[in-house]
Length: 302
Ligand code: ATP
Ligand code: MG
Figure 1 (spheres, rainbow, N blue to C red):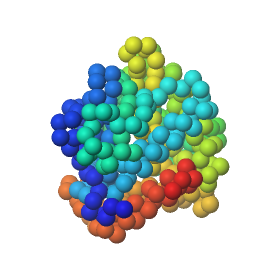
Figure 2: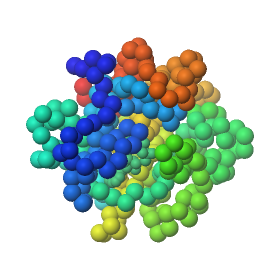
Figure 3: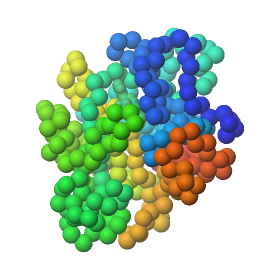
């Protein structure tokens, strides 16, 4: 079991594969012109800033969580296509690097990622709640009056896309019509698929004591077949709000299995939005526990 100082915040494949991109959490390498090695590090970001140190094994958890969801979603929606190929590492990776990369890496189909975040919300919270209190709308969509904080949308989940900001910029909530203008021919598939997948996942998690309040999907286009393909990570604590069903009640915010702990600490210490922040061991530990708890509930696994 790695210690807190052994979180993997950056990867170095020693030239085994070319690096194509580093996101806030993932390092992407090219295996061949159709295939990427999608490596989840232990980096953690809050308020769009990456912490100096990481959460040990978070990347493993995100990868296995995503893999579990791809299987569950495909079972419910057999026509679904995902970017996932295998958890096996490609032969180019030398023996010495395999232990650290195993289970935190997926081989995926390289896609042209569509430039919106396909967010689906089943419950009103976060930025949607703030907007609703001011204007009675969510992403500009008129919703039922009189909703309480954390309440489920009475007419079912709603599709509330955002822009996919360039590095350092903030994503911006947009109306589905604006997303449609950006996505053109793919818009209706993205919207209906996102809502359908949210519904499947919500039902699956609810049986396991977890409410998925909202989540964000990313889709890509397979240039050969022109099909819309589910990409990125799915239904992880980084891309979703998970609430324990046991303690759920409307009319207030919910404790969640996510980064709330870290966010609260950053605010309390006056570190919100600052660069180069090192989490204390206690914050690392408590955040790690939240991620693990979410994983164990949803997968039933250890
Ligand atoms: P970004 O770096 O775009 O701001 P992020 O910080 O969330 O986003 P990570 O999650 O760390 O990024 O890295 C994943 C990156 O890989 C994202 O930019 C995502 O759009 C991209 N991506 C996901 N799946 C694929 C795929 N199959 N092909 C190409 N790119 C992908
Ligand atoms: Mg991401």
